[in-house]
Image (cartoon, rainbow, N blue to C red):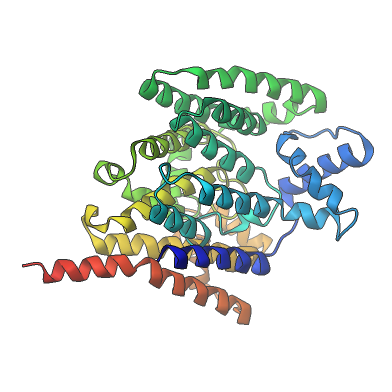
Length: 399
């Protein structure tokens, strides 16, 4: 079964690459133009985003000078980052992540998480930040401090808004291990953020935006339970967060999961008061992509040991809904018109206008490729639910 899941993961990556609609738009286009100005003209464009993440895509920019275009390659940058992260996960030591749990986790990331969505179709900065932060916390939990600190620094410096999340995760790690070196990342990353802001004039935009905040209770409720942006709907695996289930994981991996959850909490606490908590016209909770990792690991653990879950029906619904989140974002996300996106953000508390339910409430055109993509998702869902069905059959026959 491990080989089957690994093969399906590889096929899923290819399917997503061939199906996704890659493009440069919004903040991603601003980031690309800044990189293009630096590499093409040696100039620092006046903009508020960090150049750290885009600089790692410089090889793709140069590749575009000899094959396709720089825009073509950079539009696929986040997809390549995600694929590389999957390869790193696959090559991790068996003691870090047991084989069967690993392959199922990878498969879920590809077909049942927010990663299989517009997050990979653009040049936005969240995938770089999230993937580096996730590996940083994994390295810290497994006592590889140098690797962890470097990755955590790059992640935090690329996205200043994640510094509160870094603080919470660093304190949680220090409390657990009695090693507080991770907190040293915060002032260093903050210093780089200040220096970079002075170089390309990025501070003015952040100051203006910070002055127009959202009431904290409104933002917190919106980021957790609103139908259009709530992470409990876009990362439903978080509902499985139970002590008994986490206890089935190896100690260091369980600690990693805890650090990821503290990081997500830090993001929630910060963005709840941010003026643009919704991520604007972006599909789903743009700034909460990190929630996809603990949600996916919890689902993988639950499917590995379904006996630890009280209700197999609830587990089945969570897995099925997660697959729908990924499929809906991939198939229907790019179809949003400007008017539909406006409706989504204004009425994100109303189920009818949620991006997750709108395709069921409105007339949408589904072509042959869309049907194949949805059929692929249903087929993988059946495989994921196989251990749940087996466990349910065993319960029925237990006297």
